[in-house]
Image 1 (cartoon, rainbow, N blue to C red):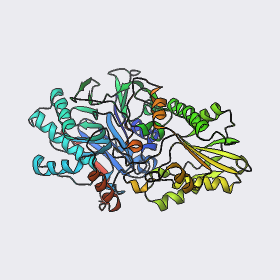
Image 2 (cartoon, one colour):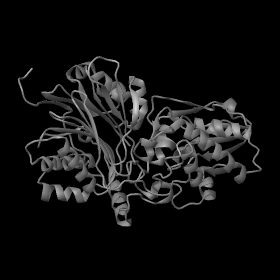
Image 3 (tube, rainbow, N blue to C red):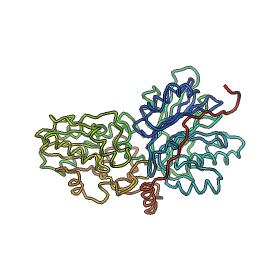
Image 4 (cartoon, rainbow, N blue to C red):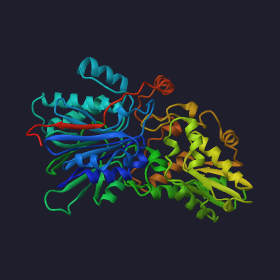
Length: 506
């Protein structure tokens, strides 16, 4: 999970990109980067940390030009916290190319061998995003014969990328002398949406981002989602073209976007994230009635933030009081994203603090969006007991997470998942609750598709072990588990880039 954004405008885009990354910050807190162009040079600054910490006034002044891309990074399977893997990535051959990627390739090692032995290109980091960049660069060169890069050549190159790359990828790239290129994998696993602004004189202005909230905040009108397998190309003067570049497509957006990853005020593939979470709460209420019919619950309390819509609708359906029992410190990172159990466990108490009045002497139902490792759940159940709760029940708006996710979410090993080898009763004992309720998978699908019936299939591998790309083997899962346990060493590099694309120096 990462956040990406691209803008083509009639005026400088540095502030637009910064503002967009700020509202996409929830998609990655490990590193941030922005690259722009004035038509002659690329300018880039990137580094580890939050957007507000990476960019300062001096950096923003150097990011000149009316076109650019940005990225917030969240490391996925096997990735160390390596400053060299901050994005965007750059190659200067054949045409000068910058790329920002959200997702995870599942045939990275195979592609690396092809790149070294056949494409005769070099990879400088352990990132699959740099692999994807070099595959795209090679195919652009092949499609254009290394001479002239026109629209047809670009779309042919994306078609070849789809043929070679497997897994999940939403991509925004900036091509020197051409414009902005964006495309999405043939399964539409990771989100990508675009909008336009016609408020200024001149050509229309375009913005592409991971979530619609970036369009809303900046003031662009949403046009639509990029379709699975589709590529869109926007020139520096605002001319827009699109092409379906995959021979076969299947629209299967990642279910975890709706459960946890995306902001509630976003709309992804025509589905309001907020409304889908409200529906999850309604189905979860039905599940609770059937599973714990004799439970005498006094109050429903969400575990902030993403579980609030589900908790509110559940409480309404059951006719129970809804209360805020936890105060969240918004300056602590999302525990799900933090590496290492020790850091994660320590951060829970720093991140949440209970309001004892809402717990004392009561039987409480805590509602969370999902239960992944169980570390956070165990701590929060204990916090409720320490605050005087008589009984503590826990409801998850998502089904048990039992399998590794290989498409860009940090769940690479089954050994880390509390539900991998346990049934619900065992999980309940492990986290110390008096009762545990999980959402049913079919109910979860129904809740989300009810908001947009046109989307009826989802990527749900972390719940059911079915990988939509059809290429995931036990050997692959074993390999990424080993990679997670023995991550490669980090690289070191400078985060500033200033590259001449031709013409006179300024």
